[in-house]
Every structure is written in structure tokens, then in C-alpha cells.
Image (cartoon, protein in one colour):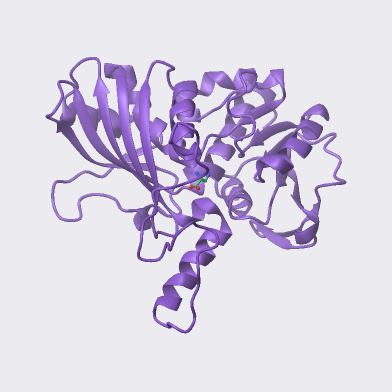
Amino acid sequence: MGYKIVIVGATGNVGREMLNILDERAFPVDEMAVLASRKSLGTEVSFGEKTLTTQDLDTFDFSGWDIALFAVGSEATKTYAPKAAAAGCVVIDNSSLYRYDPDVPLIVPEVNANAVHGYAKKNIIANPNCSTAQMVVALKPLHDRATIKRVVVSTYQSVSGAGKGGIDELWDQTKSMYNPTDDKPPKQFTKQIAFNVIPHIDKFLDSGETKEEWKMVAETKKIVDPSIKVTATCVRVPVFVGHSEAINIEFEGFLDEDEARDILREAPGVMVIDKREDGGYVTPVECVGDFATFISRIRQDSTIDNGLNLWCVSDNLRKGAALNAVQIAELLGRECLKKG
Ligand code: 2RA
């Protein structure tokens, strides 16, 4: 016996990836409902060999459904997630709405799978932000070995993190560079993104950090360890899919780069590609469509006693969103619902 699954926001980038990944990983689905807002109603989406037609999120009755994977913004989540949860359907939410709620577990299955049992307080589990998910997969096994004190991270985040509008803007601006009469002023981003980089993702906070940077701090603490200090600079780059991160880590004790490489090679969800030669590292275009978080450029930081640097790349629509949500559904099924 399998599960009755609902995808909320099935026509978006992440919703479609959720459908692909549920199929690729042969998740035990008995019945699938795909929901969308009124403006996308009737749109068809693929689930394996099947073509499904979207139903109206506003009138859908969640009673009798097991798990709803939400891939809509915080506003829609605020309206519909409590309805689904109250109807007995466990919500796995990709928005930021519940991430910092102490009664909602925030889960990356490779890191804090045990927290899944906390789902029952609200019938809701939160999926972390893309930039956090890939980083904590790399940090956790190193933290277990040598206790991380502080992380300094700079991100290089692809435009797909900003949704379809971000992808379209990079594509249109890139084309318009070669056709000066076809000017495409920025709409989705605050400055030109084609052939440029923008040190600004999400809104500014009073502290001077952006919300994206704050999320990396707060979510790492909730998922891995509240004692880890994190400082982040989040940057949008003209890449379609795949977020990259340059991570500097300071440990309590010494951790040799070769041992760190061995630990990461054994770590769940991690693929180490780290040859000290031309091309012996991963770039975002190579990680698209993959399940792994790739780690390269592992090396000692000789400016501090116990420091390492590394380069971390992952498909932000997968590990950063849809894959992690499906992994949570697998974990929930295995540990709590036990139907599959
Ligand atoms: C971004 N973090 O890349 C967002 C997506 N969740 O903009």
C-alpha cells in the first residue's frame, strides 16, 4: 500500500521537480493530486508516464490525503497549509513560513532525520532554504568529527532560485545584449543580471544583512547546532540552475584536509570531486539534475589554527528544494506513517 500525495503549486519549477523526483525515486504513490491557483487551473503536468490536470487549490478537500508537498509562496501557504494539516494531511512546506517555528521541525534528512517525529505537533514539516540545505549536508559530518565554531560563506546563487521570472530575465537580457534596440530593463532583479553579479538576495534587514543571509545563519543553527556562528554574503550570479558556495570553516580542534576529504567521501548525500588539476572540481552546469551535493577544493586555511576551505555546489531546484522535500516525505513514511 502506498500514499495519497498532493502537490500544491504543481505548475512551478519546484512543483514540477517534485513530480519528477517522486517518479525517479519510485516513491510509493497510490493516488496523486496536483493543485494550482485559479490562474493556472487546468494546466497539465507530467508524473512519469501520466499526464495530470491541475485542480483548484481553493476548493480542494485535503481529508483522506496523506502528505501534501507545498511549493507555493508564504502567503498561499499561510492560507492553505493549516487547512491541509487540520484535515490530517501532513504538510511538507518549501516556503519560509514555518521554518523558524519551534513547533515545526526543519529537516535535512542527511543531517537531522531524528527531528521528523516533531511533525505531529502541527502536522507540518519545513524544508530549508536552498543555500542552507546544501551547506549543512557538507558541514554536519565535519562538525561531528571536529566541532565547528564558525563558518564564513559566500554564495553564488543561480537565477532559478528566484523562480521562472528569474530564468526568463537572464535569458531575455542576455539576448538583448546583442540587440541594443531590444532593451530589457531589470524587473525581477534590482540590477542587470546578464554578464553581471548582484550582492543582494531577498530583502534588507536593519542589521544590513539580507534575509537570505539571515536565513543561512538561523537555519544552520536550527538544523545542525545552535552554537555554530555563521556569517554569509549571498550573491546572485548569471547561472540558470545550480548554487555554489565558497565555505570557510573554523573548528575547535585540528582537522587535516585529507581526513576531511575522506569524511566527506563517506558522508550521505555528498559527492567529492577534488583533484588538484585543471577541471578537477565541480561547476554548477555539471550538477544540474543530480541528487548529490558536490564538494571540491578542500584545503587547509593556513591563516587560522583549525581552518578549512571548500567549494560546495548543488542543484538548487533539487537538493535545495524538491529533492529535500521528497526525502522528507520518504523519511516521514519510513519512520512515522509506515504505509509504503
Ligand atoms: C533564492 N533562496 O535562491 C532563494 C530560493 N529559495 O533566491
